[in-house]
Image (tube, rainbow, N blue to C red; front, side):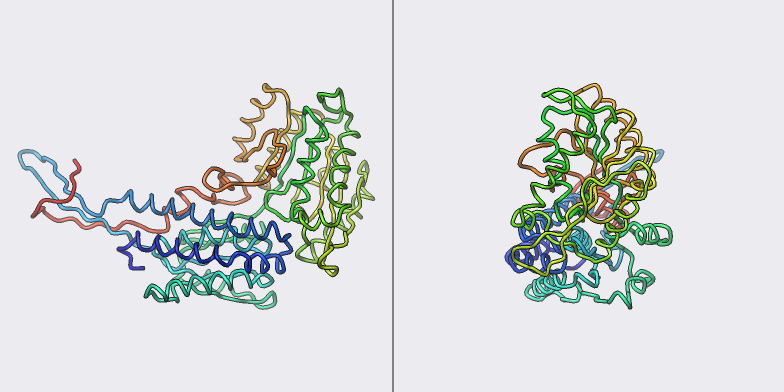
Length: 466
């Protein structure tokens, strides 16, 4: 893993990814039991999809390092004198990288952060969330074994475990040897890091107010199904889960005629019920709720909604009977219909299965509020349904200006909140939901710096620049 061997480092990371893939059945069970994901989601989203993101970061690391030539001959004339210099460029790692993992998706951000730092020559300390240690322990075991098998120091990758009562992340953050921090987790702590970490490289992904604007559609049933699936996936504990659905208060146009606001809201409830009322289907999609505080939060929201003027509870948050794990903590979505002037309920992120159906003045007003809240609170994924190209074109500018990724009219087999490596940029870094993107060149390029030395040329160099 020497600093002069970037290709060898990348090859070692690829070997780690290959070995981790071979343990994916074990990893899936680990993620399922500590995070509450369904087995299917744990197997795919926390396995190959997460590894894809890690390999994507390796590809950017390879590009960033290959863009720096190791040596050049530089020629220039100064007055009557021709000057020739040999210049050598050395890639120098920043320092130890600290990867702070989240509880609900421990591998998703950890793999790209780990590989981006390791590939660029930086040792890595991985600090899992105290209630989601097993998946990262499996990953660290395999990475350390790979290093040892190829004659490298296994301590280039270490695991730092703590408890909820005695956290240790700040100890590493304050250590001068730690120069890179990758954080995934709550907006509260992520914001604290963004305000207080100075003189170090910090990458954050937190969360935000993901929204759906439903201005019009061809099939209300198909659109409601797409929104319900995105809402129900992992019990709305994903950073891409929609929370707020905006519908014009006077209803929407569909291929079957006009649908009132009430009809749209009830169609969403019915589509959720199709999943929630069938335990085998619910188990494969919703999984379990990871933490009891999330359930308490949703119940408290239901109490608030019941006492809030204009708000109506269309669906209570109730559990379902998991067919394989009868003691699993489950909760199906709370659905609340309310006017747009009741922002006190919906204008902040609530981490858990809750969906607000908001009666907007119009489609334009819905876009305006959704993008404004994203600028203020952040958003990672946004969704828009409309049959009017002029409306879509106008909305695109508003979403772009708010730094929001947008999915338009997604139906069918692919989940609306699925993000693919190599083609979907995850988080923009342009709103409070995070300052980093998975994955772009900026995610890796700063993890090393370039040191040069130059001297009068004494021999032909490998290449020339002028």
